[in-house]
Length: 118
Image (cartoon, rainbow, N blue to C red; front, side, top):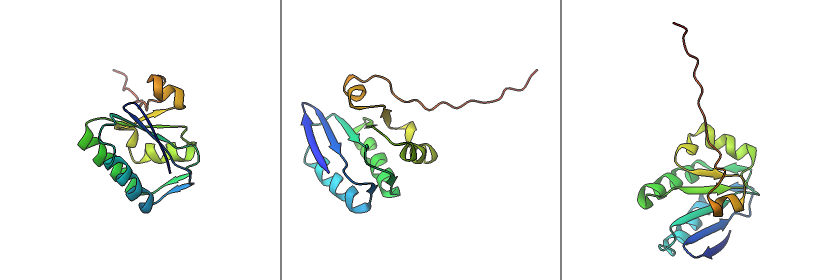
């Protein structure tokens, strides 16, 4: 895991294909040392699988901070894990790093319903 601080933005580059419980503990430690960061961006370019402990950690972090974590460069397989676990309702998912910096082009989950004809 690589860490970059840019003003009040903290960006974490995850350099592994799988996020395990050990990675979650490391991420917790990193974020405790940076309470001034108002935005958290996680680069998911190399990640192919996410452990459920990561989802619960992000939920707890969001509740404590009252801000959303943001993911960018997310692979399709990870995006599907986010969708199935309903993570996209409390995190922002961006296409790439520049979209995260500029807060543009958030990938939005849309639910469509069939309407009964009257």
